[in-house]
Structure formats: C-alpha cells, structure tokens
Image 1 (cartoon, each protein chain N blue to C red):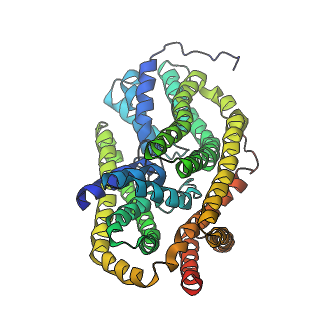
Image 2: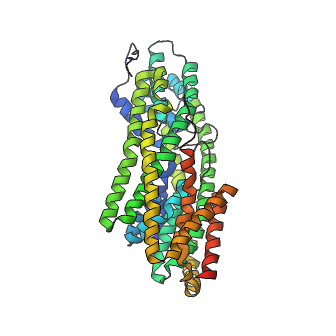
Image 3: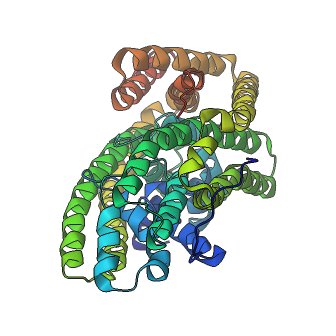
Length: 212
Length: 262
C-alpha cells in the first residue's frame, strides 16, 4: 500500500478521536488491525493494537486538556512495524518505533492545539458571516474545519512515514544485528508501562459523587 | 419520571427533526476552539430545527449568535443540553416567556454536571472497560476470525450506551425542558457505571493474569519484567505526572536492563 494512501487512512481514522463520530474506531485496538490488514499482516496489526492500547487509555480529554495523540501514534507505529518486518528484527523494530511513537504522539497533540487555534479564526469568520446574515456559511466553515484537521494530520503522518522510512531500515538492521535477542523484554515492558498509565482510572472511579 | 412535563402550546418540532439533530451531533466537537470550546458544533447541531423555529434571516442569525457563546460538555451528554435548548427556543417562539437569558443560564448550569458525568461514565469507565475487555479477548482468541468477532463485541458494548445517551439525551432534554436536571444527576447513571466498573476491574485482572501466564510459559524473567515495568512506571508517573517523560524513561531504562542482563 502506498504511503500516501496509508497517511490518508490514518488521518481519516484520527477524525474519530475528537472531531467526528467518536465510536472508538480510531483506538489502537481497532485501527492497528485495520492498518495491518491493509498492509498484508493482520496478525501483527492485532499484536500492535494490543501492545499500544493501554498506553493512551489513562489520559482523559476533559475540558481543554491537551492529551497525547496516541491513536495517530499507534497507527504510524503499526504501519512502520509492518513495513519493516521483512528485515527480521521484530524486537528492535518495535523498540525503535515505540520510542518514535512517543514523539509522534507529542507532535500530533501539538498539531491539535494549533488546529484549535485555527478554529478560533473560523469562529471569527462565522461571526462575521452571521453579521452579514449568511447563516448557511456556518455549515461550510464547519466542514472546512474538519478538512483542515484531516489535512494537518495527513501531512504530519506523511512526513513522518517518509522521513522514517529513509533511515529506519538501516538503523533496525544495524542495531538488530547486535542486540535483537536482548530487546526481547520490550513487549512486556511496554505492556507493564501501559498498565501503570491505566492505574489512576481505578482511583478516579471512586471520586466523590458530583450532583447537579 | 412520573411527573408529566408541561407541553408547549404550539409544537413545531417533530421527532424527525430531533433525529436530524442527533445525526448532526456526531460532529459536536468539530470546530473546538479555545474561546467558546464546543459552541460552534453545538450550534450547527441545531440547524435542522432552525427553519422550523424562525423564518426571517435576522431571527435565524440572532438564534445562531445566541448559541455561539461559550459552551462545553462531554460530547455524548451535550445531547441533553441540545434537547433543552430546542425546547426552550420553541417555547420562546410560542410566546411562553422563555427569554434568551433563561436559555443561556440553563446551558451554563448544565456545563458542569454534563461534563462531569460524561467524563466519569464514558472516558473513565465505559471506554477502558470495553477496550481492556477487548484486549483480553484478542489475547485469548486463537484465530483471526475470533479476534475480529471480539472487536465487533467491543464495538457494541461501547457504542450501545454511547448511542443511547446521545439520542435519549436529546429526547429527554426536549421533553422535560428546564426540569431536565432531575434526569442528569450522578445517581441516574450510577448503576450503569458500577456495572462497567466491575467489568473494568475483572477484565484488567484477567488481562494481567492471562498475559502473566503467557509470559511465564515463555520465560519467567519476562513475567518479572512485566511486573517490574508496571511498578517502575507507576512510581515514575506518580512522581512526574508526565506521560512523555514516564513512557520514554521507562522504556530507555528497560532497554538498558535488557542490554546489561539478557
């Protein structure tokens, strides 16, 4: 599958996170198998979804909080792991791509903040159009905002995939040749860390009841 | 639920209109911005009823501007505020003394409880319960077909309550108007939250147990790494409160451990 189409798919799935629908399909558990399936290895997609799901689950996007964009990061990570599996160093690939995915989740979160600032400009435009009694423009501007988000994420994913694919195969081969067997601990370490991020949810579930 | 609400003297909105509002509500957070938060998405959701309520462009623009003021809520539970706003606008059009200030005030009052209930019920309970149950299913399912079946089940156990509250909120808000506060107390959702919370606890324990057993069968040392990674990250996360620092430093730490001792 072409990197262009792959980026388009990941950016489309990212809309489900906060922009539209919010039916869970952007979660790693759903998105990673889909990406794996399209790239020809659904089993690896399921494995990546399983590994990455817990990491981003504990962060609640309440109010104006900015949370790591784990869904996009997981999609990018799954694509990179599947694309580089032919190198024969799965543990090294997952280790390096996991470290990159933390950076990707930060970049995507920053892009979301940028997008929300752009939406402030869209609000000004809407108010201006309403002054001119053009109320139908509101729907068009809402659609434009959705497209802007998809484009921002598409460009981010595309640049990351293209850049990473330039040097990652060489790095995986170099490091994998030396340390592949030592990096066998990466999967339990990721899952253990993920569990630690989910742990606060148990505490939050017992917070004092809030009445209207 | 026994007390029947006062009906508007002139019913302008049909169930079909409310269904269109429900469909539009899937884009509730589309134009989220730092000044008015979800107010643009909220206002766009009401466009399907706009022509039923107002006829002149001036009235329509006033209506839209009124709802573009600051508003925030959990995206699923904002449906209650949508229903209430539509109902009050309808009463205002029918001349039943609902002023724009009343509508604004009620919306402001709903921000806090709708946000708190939604975040606690969905983000902190139903979502993790559904996804961790799915993880257990994927770990235990032996074939790809069964894994897809697990995903379908997870999709349903999350989205059945999601769609129910999204739609029912609009209907209840519209039906009860200002009295909707009786139906959005934390206690109304406590039974459902507790059920999903039990699912969350059981599925997490099952996940830890089944993954731990699987690792032990491969190598007991890997099972120890899993436990130690949890303890290390939990401690570090408590210390820093930063996802990025904790996840990065934890993995670097275990890479170094792997290189030194494996």
